[in-house]
Image (cartoon, rainbow, N blue to C red; front, top):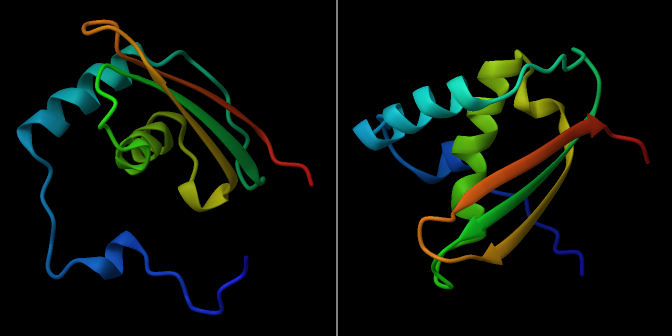
Length: 109
């Protein structure tokens, strides 16, 4: 179903400057360290697949997207506006078995 309205970005949804929490800073450092070395070509359209393992059924899948996407962009030196297709899946796992996995590829229609 198509709805004719300009989508609202996260940047437009909030007033003022947002600041990273201490938890986000720790997460970013750990994730940057754990991410594998990849060569993501610049200036191409990308497809990003994210699979998230939550231990709570109440966890919102979309809440992990922007921080993770921003950290991937930082690690691999691409602009996240290059992402033309985003696929996210959620899985419920036992406590202490939470994870996030991803695949980045060239987007092709």
